[in-house]
Structure formats: C-alpha cells, structure tokens
Length: 469
Image (cartoon, rainbow, N blue to C red; front, side):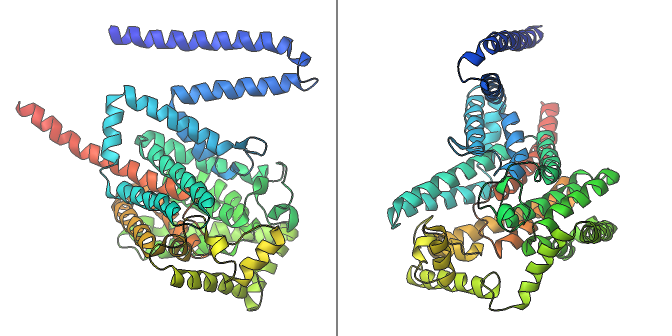
C-alpha cells in the first residue's frame, strides 16, 4: 500500500506540474509580444519547451541518454553558434541527472560500481587520464585542456550508455537508427552553414555534417538495424536500407562505401559469427546494389560527385587522395619520431605538424588558422600521446573486441554493435576517430550488454542460495 501511495504521489506531482506549466505558458504567451517583438511568442515558446525538456531529463536521466544517441546524426544541425553546442548542453543535463539518481537509487549505484570493475571501462579511464596528464608537456596547453574536457565528456557518454538496462539500450539504438534514416530527407531541408562541404562541393551532410563521418554513421545504423534490431522485422529493415544507403552514397565518401562493402565480409572471417550472419548478407548486398543503381539513374547529380571522387583514386598526385594522405602521414611520422614516448600533447597535432606536412600547411593557409588532421587514428594518437598513449589505446581495442565478440555470438543487438565496431575500425584507417561520439556509444553499449549478462548469471546463483537458506 505504501508503494502504491508513493506512486500515486509521484503521478499527482507530475500531473500538477504539467498543469502549472500549461498555466504559466498560457499567461506568458499573452504578454510575449511586448518583449522581443513579433517573434516574441515563438521565442518564448521555444524557451519554455526547452525548459520543460531540461526538467524532464533532470527527472529521468535515461531520457537524456536516448536523446543523446538519437541526436548524433543531427549533431552539426543543433549547434547554437551564439551559445554553444546543443550536444554539450544535453550531455551536461544527462550527467547531472545521472549523478542525482546515483545518490538516491541503491541498485543503480551498485550497477555503477560493477561498470567500473570491467577492464574496458578501466582502460578508457586510464586513456583519458593520460590525455589529461598531457597538458603538462603540451606546447599549447589551451588546446590540450580543450581536448581533455572533450574526452572527459566522451568518458561520461560511455558511462551513461553503459548504465542503461538492456530494454533501454535497445530503445536507444532504435532511436539512433530511425533518426539516421530521418536525417537523409532532413538534409535537404535543414539550413547549411557557409563553407560546409554540402554548400561548397555538394557532398551530402545534413546541417553541415562532415560527409565522411556522416557516411560511417549511416553504415553503423544500417548494420545495427539489419543484423541487430530488425532481425525479426525484415520488411522494415529492407525499407530502411535504401534510405541509409542513399545517405552513404550521396556523401561521396570513399571510406563510407568501403565500410558498406567490407564490413560484412570481414565479419564472415570472425569465428562463429559468420554462421550467425548466415544468408542474410547476400540480400543486404542485393538491396544496397539496387539502391545505388536507382540513385545513379534517378539522381545523376549525386552520382556525378561520387564517381568524380572515386576516379581521383587513379590520380596519385591528387591532394585529395594519395599525395595528400601521404603528406599528412609523413608529417605525423616525423613528429612521432621526435616525441616518441610522451607525444606533443592532446589537441596539438595540427600545430606540431605544421612544418612537416605540406597538406597541413596548405589547409592552415586556406582557413587562416592552424589546421590539419592525421587521417589515421593510430598516427593521430601516437603523435599527440606518444607510445604510452598508443599502448593504452590498443589496450582499449583489445578489451573492446574481447568483450564484444562473445556477446555478438549470443545476441542480435550484440551482432549489430560488433559490426558497428568493424565500421569504426575501418573509419579509423583514414579518419581520426578516437574522439568520435559514436565510438564511445559503441563502448558503452558493449559494457551495458556485459553487465546484463553478468546480472543474468548472478540471478540463478542468488536464487539457489536463497533456496538453501
């Protein structure tokens, strides 16, 4: 009875709060035009809705986790230039909400403690600690500090996802898949920032998203949906696949196309996983090939951009392919050789390689500021964090795949997440993905599934023990 009374009290408080909010909104709307002018009602409505949404996240941290994952395909679109990143605001609210929940929920706190007993979580924590320590020897300590804060946020994101129970984790990945599919038509509606790839070269990227990163996000969403979430709902998977394939092809990302083709083939080489994937790989290739053929015939402008970039692979001197990549890699190798143990410090890659990479120098000259990327995750980590940081990063990969593989053998969602990890590794060969949010969502998902398996193993032993007593 006390439990029912408690639930009734919570429900009454929620309904009362909603009624009070509606009254306040109605009263405020009546006088809104007196303040910001004609746009007053819309501005005020947006502020009130954002406030209500923030309160909802503070009351339920899982809602924040779901929204964070669903917002990944729209990350560039929700940047508020005058205020800051919308993702950072969502993450901050979710972290605070989770911290408050840990203070009041004993079972949640026990799950939090078990999460930190996992070797994968400890490895990521050690890696972030080393990034924080690199502030001490970085030449540009401001950049190192910004990189440290970014990685602390990524660590928090991993923890939030890792704390989700299995049903909420499934819901989070469902939100990500459908959000990814929705971002494809939304990309032609959302405003484009000046200088974005889509505005300049026509390469698809919703809201100014980087085409290469966006293409790999679409590939992860495709495999998570097709081989994981929608394994029993084939028709829905077949309907979503062409939309996601269009998102990959329209970016004209060679990395995205390689990930689309190579990931299932690489998965077939993994012991016992090939049998689990079975005959479903061939229909996926058929659907993807048919979608690309339709795109080429129906949208020739998109096909022209993609084919032009693919043709550049046969031009070794092109700055966009082999020559440019080799210049970046040579610069990273030179800097790594001069700072082999500690590296140059987190966030200091571009400045350190400015005099060693012609491509990096050209990019900095073009943008009017220090710029440049390693275009390889191993070289990026080695240059900034030295041999120690690289070892820690490889330890993360070891525990990540060691933990994820047994889960992939027994779980459909685990299979989809494992394929997502393969996409991330392929992306890391030509992109600097050590700081991409989706990588830490994948890590957190592996942790969440491992905690679920551990809990299921403990439950029978607990029941047996209680039966004897």
